[in-house]
Length: 203
Image 1 (cartoon, one colour):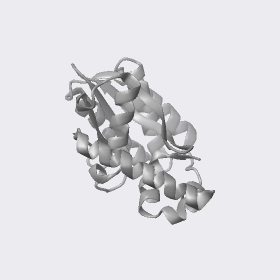
Image 2 (image 1 turned 90 degrees about the vertical axis):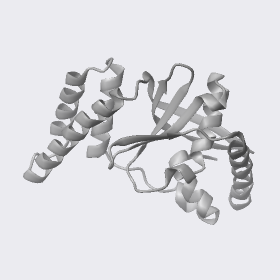
Image 3 (image 1 turned 30 degrees about the vertical axis):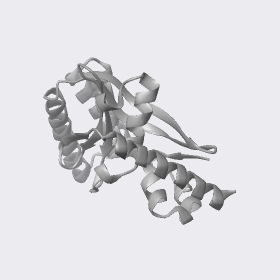
Image 4 (image 1 turned 120 degrees about the vertical axis):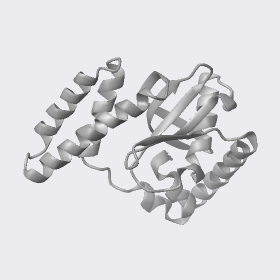
């Protein structure tokens, strides 16, 4: 059974509703999605700010009615785009990949999948960033230590050289953590137990 890392915390908190959680409908093309695609253009075009802004404006104008409310939203997102670029440039990271996809085999045929907002390199390691648009205590979520383990195994980087975290869209800031070995072991054990619980429900 495959399911998105976006659903993991819901499943963790209520495994009995696994089928209903994973059956949730996919979201439609949104203004925030348009913004994220402009960010992708910015990174993949070697930090070409003008190209990113033009890309956002073209997509927005093509997909949304330009009434007064949407024009205001458009300007707010352009301001957020400006501040994201400024914030990113203060981090000193080397861009590595955008919307990288993960496939994490957790146990007995259950696989966590989904996109990662951004990957960056540091002088001696890797930074994994997810996009957060909701108010939550991200550092307590199970997916972050699992991502630290996944990229350590996939890219052969020691776990203590990997930072995982978020870009908080509302607060407009990056936050990161590196989990210790005990936390990583506990996360692996918990997700295996969760996988067993899922199989009891599904099979």
